[in-house]
Image (cartoon, rainbow, N blue to C red; front, side):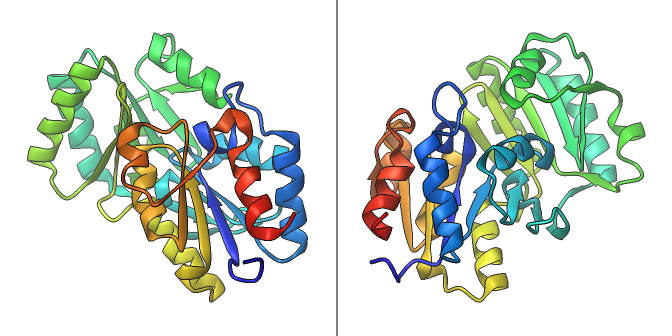
Length: 269
């Protein structure tokens, strides 16, 4: 099996990171050994590039990175290879709708390196800051993203019932956008062709690697399409049942170095 797979994709939260938000030491060592064999380990996440960089530094590898679920694909040196955004005028109109119809939800807007919120003291924002290690900035979408020409992602945070209501409403008025409740309290909204599977396929094509020779790991609903597209996709044992049931293979959970266990089996580490 060692010679069959040529590239590895991995989600971050709940997959690569353990429940203490750490990269296990032995997993890191295995990733670096595989890189020496010419097999890149690509981080792929709904996070912004800035939210992914600390994890990449902790890994110490030199590989591309897929942020915003493929809304932005970066090469190993951080240069943009591919980019997809919700266009500026539409983004402004959507933020106005969120403010008008769902004022109880916390809305984070991401574009490039910017993370813009209405209230940086909001409990949901503070929680996301603790997870990512980043600091949100207060501002308006209209002012902050005009020069960029769009936004990469909206993240709505709130009680699950309110998130479900917002998801249904947005689906009615913006059916072409990509939406996923990455957890019951989070709704991520991106440009319609943005999916993790698209990032996986794009990079496989870029490297001239058949998709069948890719491996992917994930634990969330926004990972399912990637896990189904990969040559071999693994749902983590800590993933919700609705994720595990839709994926052919399961890896041990993130607190028992599930990625390492699989890599040892497949690559004789």
